[in-house]
Length: 325
Image 1 (cartoon, helix red, strand yellow):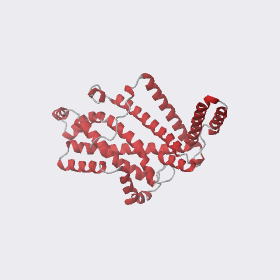
Image 2 (cartoon, one colour; image 1 turned 120 degrees about the horizontal axis):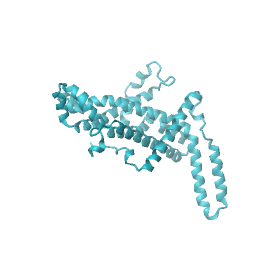
Image 3 (tube, rainbow, N blue to C red; image 1 turned 45 degrees about the vertical axis):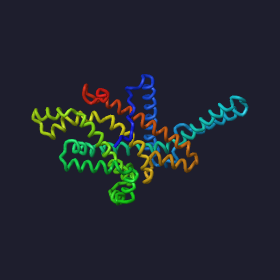
Image 4 (cartoon, rainbow, N blue to C red; image 1 turned 30 degrees about the vertical axis):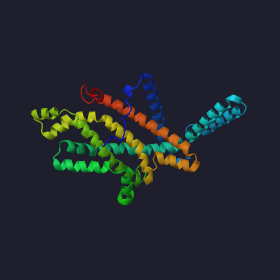
């Protein structure tokens, strides 16, 4: 199967000025997001999401927009430009007013993504090793799993878990589910679904990376007294996992965007929060544009962070994708 995603942003490939701008935007975005989350959890834990106040009062921006409209009324040839500026300020005011609800949705999007990709990695590594070094039975089991999961839509998998199987009922029976900071059942169903789906794709990325490791590495490991399993564990995997980081970055980007599918099983993540605001305000296009900016900021900053991580763990001659291009 062909890859369904493009490679993530490599901060090292960007010119210095653009790199600084991107890093600066990331620092501002995550700084605001963390401040928003801490404010809502610590200072306003009992306030409903729809009642939380933004840090910047939208009324100030709305007043500026009104002034621009008044100026445009007598501006003659410049009226169009002023009206365009007024529309931009009104859009900014709407975006600012929506920030608390979108920040709450972004929190669910982030931990859905992080939990799913880490849990999926724990499943993907044994699958990849089985596909690459296992016997016929293990290879067949790993191949069947990955092709079944990759060959069916993620949304269908979520529907089967949420509506078709008693997954939700079983999760609700666990003590503490849905209380305090513990997510409720639908979110755990989404984590399970994303974990299963992500593990299949990650397994293929890791398998490809393991196959790119020189077979002589395992032979050399055996020659110094390591068993086959120890050679895979201590020699092949450390190199192969470094090679897999670009693909792993793509999977992270994929999960950020496709976490929006959790909205269809009632999870109040970023997309569902935007959809609820659009239903209440009837400004559907505006709120989806604001949500798109949120997703763009998440994707770019996570891609840059993963690029830095790849550079940090790279060993000269081993594990750097750029050295193998």
